[in-house]
Image 1 (cartoon, one colour):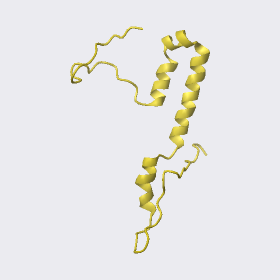
Image 2: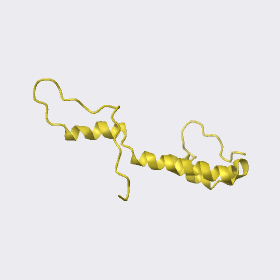
Image 3: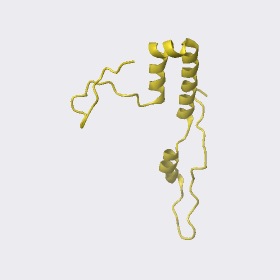
Image 4: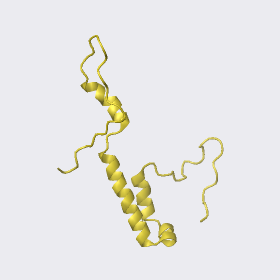
Length: 103
């Protein structure tokens, strides 16, 4: 497979029309599923199966509560601290699950 874009050196100037790499798993999965090269190299059965597993992984990620969300939003629900020991905070070991969609 030949690369069609010239290497970028220094700034990104002049490369505005060069296709960017996908930024999400689902975007990458859709490109992979539609790739004639992937289907030629790996076969339709593998591409369809592997893409389906990445779509499942994407849905799992959408349903997860991230550490960033826990840190950012858990403070909204803590009572104000008034003397004594500080109240316990949620930690990275806490894993919450969002409600499944459509239920």
